[in-house]
Image 1 (tube, each protein chain N blue to C red):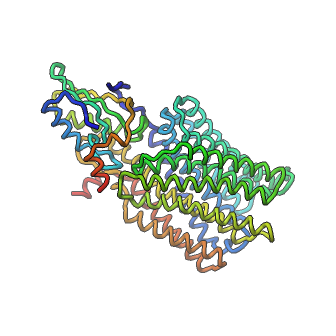
Image 2 (image 1 turned 120 degrees about the vertical axis):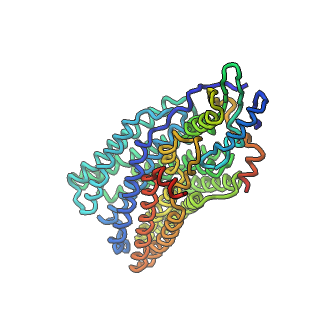
Image 3 (image 1 turned 135 degrees about the vertical axis):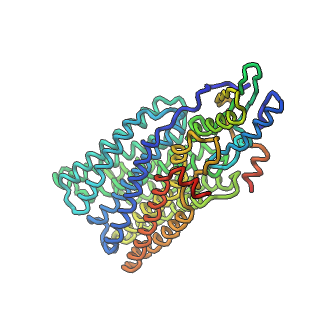
Length: 107
Length: 434
């Protein structure tokens, strides 16, 4: 599933940075795993808004994955306030893994 | 397009303080069991109803199997029901009561003194299981999520409670003799409700969730899960009634068939998950866990042979001993050995790196334990297991001793790897990678 963004250079850089945030079990990054649904930069309020999901609402690693996303963006974009919202609608499924992610898992 | 739940992050799972004591206790109990197996290996060529074998069986069933399952249940239940665990305090108390009760009961068996240590030990274990069950039921009741895997866990907890209740009655019956028949008569009922009702039902319920998840397989077949659930419970209820009211070897065979079909469906389910997996590479921990699934068929074959022989002649003692051994030291141990290193590294990783996640390089959970120790453990386990079963069947003291020695090595390597995880320090990891 492709992450929705307000399509600017910063979003592309942010998604590139988030490709360093790995799911600890799969070693696959959260972008290619399809966990990041939406990422937007609000320039007026200097905010980065992320809507993401987890593989299951009570994922034992969920807290750490959300922290990773937050920490990664905060470090990558100083001066911006990072807001991460969780959604389970639609729920994550294996169909959300990107082609690159599938290739990585199929190695 | 996306409905936002909150911006506060996911709801917290039980703290590692709740879960880790169970893992540590279980690891030590496994080491004690294998040490007792080594010192008492000669008894495995005699009748199975004797103090040393009862002590080993209960160390394995309660100290090893039940303790680690209780601990991992507290971690897994919130994932299954998508709700917080009802009470962390009840979880701590269940550890305390079981942790004290188990050695008292085992010492009672070992010395065959079935008076106060065994009796109070049994009572403490009863309290621990009641607390566990209250926690599971209360968590389950608050959940709005229908989940068959959680239902397996809940039902298994009820069977565990019935099992330990019968077990306690048998302990008291040694002294007060209030049951219509002696304790040996009820042993089969107590053992089978525990094996199939608690261990099998729970492993099937949780395994059908965890195995596809770790294999990264989207395979999910609710219909098969319901059949497994129904057949196992029907087999158990039928067995309990026929055992108490109209004992018949023919009915036992029907009960066994029900449970055997459920096990075969479980094997089929895991095979389908394996074949439809997205991640091609299967790690060593999953290989051991999948081997455990196949090993479930072994005691079933022994059981069918025992009942079939029983129809024409007396019980074959060696077959019964081998049957019990292939459960507790067989599939149950194999799946714990594999799954410990799929679950514990994540608990430790979360504890250690939770706050630092995404701020720089952190190890993967699989880097927190030694793959070499794991492979050595798996090798010692498999050779030790085969050697000991061979020793039971051929009444060969050397094979029994050798098998037990290899299982001690397995337990030592398991404990070493668990200790490596438990005492993991981030600084140490970073230094070792410089």
